[in-house]
Image (cartoon, rainbow, N blue to C red):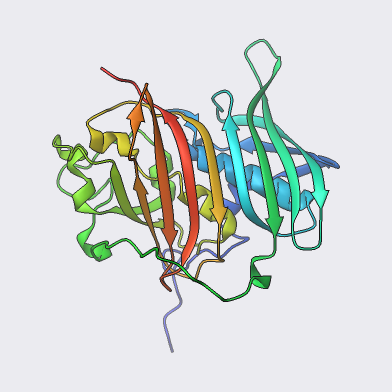
Length: 286
C-alpha cells in the first residue's frame, strides 16, 4: 500500500495557497474591497509592488466581466505598509473582447487620514480565447539548470536580503548575475532567475504580476545598494503559463538622473513568453 503523502510533499493549488489567501479581497460594496496586506510580502517593511499589483488585479477581476489581466499599468504614489487597506475599483469601459477598469488602494496614515498608495489602469480579456499564432524574435533566457543556480539560503553563508518576500518564493538566480552578493558586481544591468511560489502553487496570470517584480534589483549588479523604489510599472500578460517553474530575465540599459528602467520577460516551461514588463525606479547614487 503506497505511503500517504506528507504536508511537505503536497503542492498547493490555485485557490488554496498562501498567495491566494494573502491576495484575497472582501467585497464590502460594489467596487469597494477590504484587505489586510500581509507582512510576509514585504521588503524592509514596505509591501512589494508585484504583490500589490496582484491584490488590485484580483479586485479588478471581480469588478470586470473578463477574467484575465492583459495589461496593467500602476503608479506607486506612497509606500504601502502591512495592515488594513481598501481597494476601490471603477469600470471604465466594457467591450466584447476587452474591458478596462481602474483601481486604487488606500491606507490610513498616523493621523487617521486616508492616503492613496497605488493607482492602476488595466485592461482585461480572456487568455484562453487568444489565437495560437505566434511570430516573435524573442528567445528564452539561457539559465543554467536550477541545481546550478542559487537562492538566498544556498551556500555556507546565506545572503541576508532583508526581505520576508524571499521566504514566500523559490528563487534560483543565475550565478552570472550574483556578483553583487559576493562583493564583485559585474557592472551589467542584468538579473536572471528561476521563479516559483514556495508552496509549489503553479503560476497563473495574477502570479505573473508578482513574478516581474520579485528578483533583486538590477541596480545591485550595477554596483549600487539600498532600496530601489518603483515609480511606475506596466505589465503585459501574453499567455496563461504552463505548470512548473518560470524563468525571469530583467535588464537595465540606462541609468540617468537617479532613475533606471527594468525590462522583464517571463518564460514558462513550454518556452513561451508569458509576460513582459517595464518598470521605472529610483536609485540612490553616491
